[in-house]
Length: 430
Image 1 (cartoon, rainbow, N blue to C red):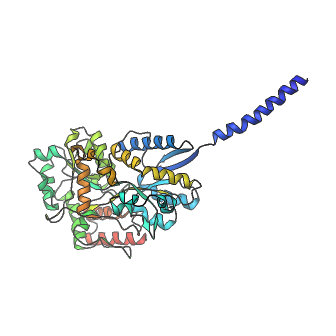
Image 2 (cartoon, rainbow, N blue to C red):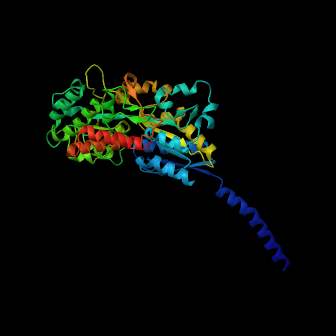
Image 3 (cartoon, rainbow, N blue to C red):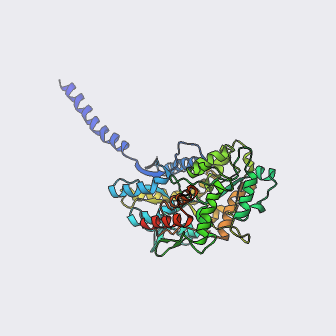
């Protein structure tokens, strides 16, 4: 009996020793959750870039694992605030500038300046040359989000179809000449132009505000968070959108229910000569095109007059950390890596995004012809750029304006009535 008892005790002792080791191994990793519209299991350029960044970060930080939980892009900020209010938000989240006012007002975002930026070497933040984007979420010395990649609304064109119609870029400088050019391009089951006018899954992609900003000092009283849509330029803008469908017939009625994803898919399939879409989709559009991808280009925005191009919006995606995250230190480390020089290189070289750092954008690689589209966007920003009033709640501003176009196109309201309604909706959200 004694040998058996001895064997039992030894086995029990070994089990006790082994037990904690197994548990420790099972719980060794700190899991940092991230909400984003990207899925690292998929193959678009930005999704491949995110997968590479996760792999690199986890290799350099063996005690931290990144768990991505993809979300619908238009719902990220709302769900983040709801999660914050219920104590169940992700550790990190992608945000666009339309959501800053609501997110910062909710207290959901942590101060990244205090979390890690304060430890940077002096002057390192100056490497972020698009200052409006770098400081977009800076309030009273606290920085609630940092830019991952800057984007904008862009007009995508097919150079081959322009050439076949006898058109040049000079024919696209004003909205009047742009409309005339789009009429020439509308033929053979191809529409001349398309802009997303859906009131769902909007994501800020719209020509409406760029056109309004091109004809007046601002579209808002930013201090009071009051919209200034119902102006001569605003009424002209909404009427022109409605006329593009019914009078000039350069785009179909379907655009009233199409979002940016719908239009970019149709553009890649050859249904449009020109479309308004997210700049960040350039490489994806090349990837998906059933026509010669080398014929794809973007152009500066037209303006009401020919003396300069239209204003270019500073948009894109920023990343924030949850203020109540129990893993805030690890979340900060992950965010810091995403905006590091290494991170920016991956976002640009693999993901096709405009580098947010001067040190990366000055690389001779970006002087090559295949990066003409990047330089077009950057030059437009340098000439005339604007950003949404980040202190205000600008969520669904685009849906309000798209609805105004639908009202006018249907004959339900005049441009003035539709824009008064849009202004009221904006102010009710404040």
